[in-house]
Length: 277
Image 1 (cartoon, rainbow, N blue to C red):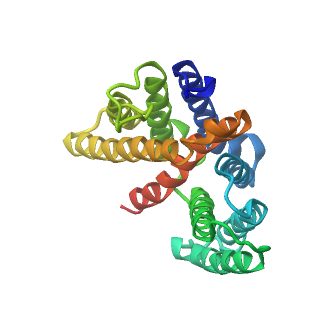
Image 2 (cartoon, rainbow, N blue to C red; image 1 turned 30 degrees about the vertical axis):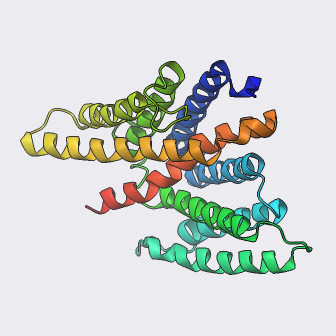
Image 3 (cartoon, rainbow, N blue to C red; image 1 turned 90 degrees about the vertical axis):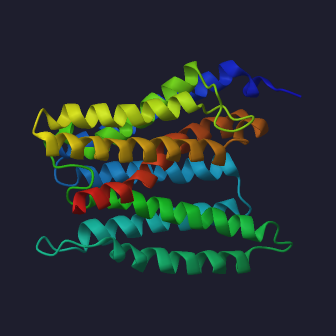
């Protein structure tokens, strides 16, 4: 039986809302240093991590949800502190620093399963939920590293802007034309994925200006990578919370937060790799 939440209008509204939230999230990260000062980006990333933790737990309702939320929140704070506060200005930390947070967090996740009251239902699913959430919040902490989100004061040329624009366009395209679907029964379309890639290329070229042939080729390659990753990550996030609307309206609303923020976490390691090139 098809419910109101499963109807095409509801799917269109969900994608439109996800596009707005994703755009706002990217703007928050890019503009926070100018608006809030030295620790503005730290505050912005904390907001995104909190939104992701709350949205993920509410949308997916994993077994032992309270513990999943606590482990995810603790990992987020630990990752941000490790990157932003424990690193000296002279020595830039590498992404390996986050393993000091992710490793213990996963051990705590196992202890959480051991301490749950019997019968311990869906242990594997709950552990998987924690693992994904810890990985995602740690990946968001990468946005605090120099040059990953973009240099302060150069919002137009920030690689994160390219990924965010691709994600927004993909959601808007799926709100209008989610056909042909990327998979049977999905409300994400091939059109949105292709437009995400095209948006990545266009935004990168416009932000980079009209340089030589090497700059154009590099811009096209960067745009292709960011657009494709953003489009695929957005599609994966939609599949991850695809059943949220079948349970309750609050879960569907929380799913919007996941669809907007989780793809940015997936894009963060790619931004780091591009910044190191």
